[in-house]
Image (cartoon, rainbow, N blue to C red; front, side):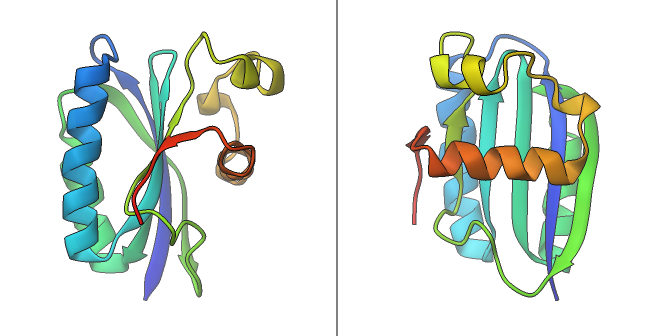
Length: 139
């Protein structure tokens, strides 16, 4: 059975390019090997991630992510069984939510996914992917 999980968290420290690249490299390799797809949105002190795959695999991955010290306030905001993947083009796409990103500032000027429903956040992820703001991804 396939599931999709979306979670939000707060960065424990600065969201540097090196930290983001380390997260992406590991996620892309592990996800490819384990049949997980998804999107990582990061910036403005927040991580927002959608993960898709077999229920047991995603559950175990979420447990590891939950214990990662690079972030705090980890909160699952959406979980559902799915018949089809939404983010199947990426082992882990990356969308920057930088304060300097004019697209994010215009479309979501008061970015606070903690205050939105999981479905609304998923719709925003889809908008960001469709608008071409994916800055790194892997098929």
